[in-house]
Image (cartoon, rainbow, N blue to C red):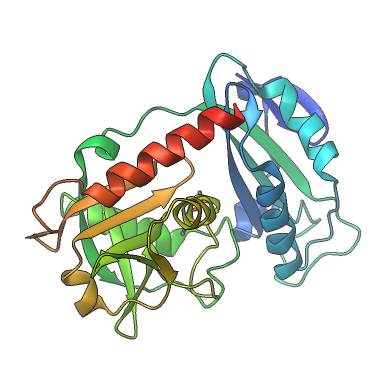
Length: 277
Ligand code: PLP
C-alpha cells in the first residue's frame, strides 16, 4: 500500500496532510481516476488532457508532462492486476483559512493505486432512479468538491438503486458518477459534452468503438420522457465500465435485462482493453 505524496513514496498510513490544506478546508482541488490493465495505464494521454483542463478551469498552476506523470505513477502499479490510479491535486496549504487564492503556495499532489474489483451489476444490470441535477454549472471540471454528487448517489442507494440519473430542465445529463447512454429507436445516444457533464474517457471509447463497428450512434440531448421509453440504458465509468440499467424509477427498461447493444459494445470494449494491455 505504497502511495505518492508531494514527491515521495510512503506507506498509506504515513501519508498526512496539514489541516490548513485547501483540499481539506474547501474541497479546493481536482482529481483523476485512471485505470491500468496489467500495469498499463489506459487512455493515459486523454486522462492527462482532462486533468490539465480541470487545473486550468480552477486556475491552479501545475504543469507536468505525460512522461512526468507516468514516472510518478509507474512505481505504484502492479503488472499482475487491474488497478486504477487515484490522483488528487489541491491548491495547497496556506498560512491561514481565507477564501481568496493564496500566493506562493505549493500545490499538494497525492496519488494512490487500488485494485479494480469487477462490478457485479455489470453482468446482471442495476436499478437507477432519476433525480434533479442539483450540481453546479461546471460539471466538466473533475473537482474534488463532490458533496452534491454524494448526496445524489446516497439518495439512489437509499432507494435500493445503484445510480442516480440526473435531470436538468427536462433533459438527462449523466449519472452521479458516470456518463449515460440510451438505445432509442435502435440508435445509441449519449448527451453531448458541455459544462453539464464530465467528458468521460469511457464515453469517448464507446463512441469510437460504436462508430468503428457499425453501431448506429449519435451525441444528442435526451429528454427524460424519451429515456423512459428507451430499450436500453447504460451508465459508464472507468472503474465500472458499462453497466446496464434494467429498471428506472421502478419500471423495467425494455424487457428488464441487459440488451443486445450492451452485449455487443461490452465485447468490443473488453477486446479493446485486451489489445492495449
Ligand atoms: N461523470 C461523472 C460525474 C463521473 O464522476 C465519472 C467518473 O467517475 C464519469 C462521468 C465517467 O468518467 P470516466 O469514464 O472518465 O471514468
